Length: 504
Image 1 (cartoon, rainbow, N blue to C red):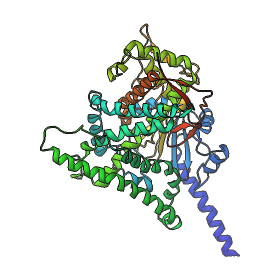
Image 2: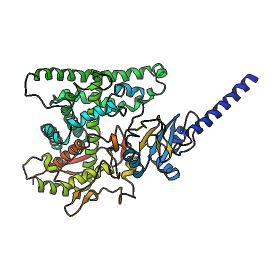
Image 3: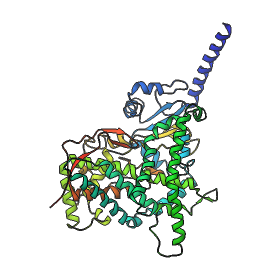
């Protein structure tokens, strides 16, 4: 009996001392709700929200109580949330490189991203700078016309598929058609070729399987060594999924290497694609080229990033255009003023379509594809923000959606009004989506790690919206703008619309 009493007393003392030491170590962290040893705020979060994935209402309540910067603990790891646009600007833009790092990758992410050897996952440093500089050189605004025929090819495919399904007279479920067209375009930009339909579908399948199941595999990241025993079937499934991805992408990579060698004898070569830019890169500090597995991870990152968020934004834009017929008519009138009937809409024409730009920006404000950005981390051990210490192992994130819906910044923020972005007598758009001077919304992030594909993403959405509105009249009996969490924030009930070819 005495043994059990001593054991119990020792355990209580240990827990108390651990809590006290934890408090002393973290007393300068941004404020947050009380924590429980080992569990952090996990139980409190589950009680505060019926769905743990929808943390935003909880953060709004915490902001009202603790201020714009809030700390939550998931187990023993601090997660710091920046909840206002002023604070976000101070962290991301004025703070420079202080919070330009990424958190250490979880076990599954290490496998999928080749131990953080991709642009989005790489730690802030020489590797990240190499990958970003390479990406921006390939997809600089001056080079986008190199992919014009790829965009037209994907658009023609989309128009044909919509016309075929619309011929039945029934409402068209447009998500699958938009996603396939965008994926075909991004595959072309990645591999430099218009691949056959069955090949594109195969790539799309393995990539979509990874996206859909990614959250389900999160359980493997908790105590991975033990998890490989307890969840061995799930680990096997995860590794098979990754292997399937390599089995599909590696033959394309090797075929591109072969064609490059053949073309080196010839001055006339194929379009310089993303994958072409990777073969000769030398990893800094390691003095070697990227391995095949690392190139697979980079291609996978490119395909997912270039397709999912753009497809999501495009569907949200079309949903609001269908719901607000007045907006659709204004777009159609503007397009006809800029481009004559029968002429192709080109990239230069999009620059003259101010209402189109405003509609796309309003879509990104009202329906950002991600309600949070990819997590940041401090680049050093002594990071301080607004007088608070930010530990190196802390996850730092930002409430993107709430910033775009802030009533102190945006009038009637939940209404869809493209006109809010039009300035001056000419109705031109003057808005810094990168948030250099100030952040009013940040769908692409901000600061050192702002999305490098902003120009390409905006171009693709504007190009497809302009052509879809010009070619078809879009109507629907009802449009439900409810959201749900997928890889990005998508429509809970995907858009179904009657698509009628325009005759005027």
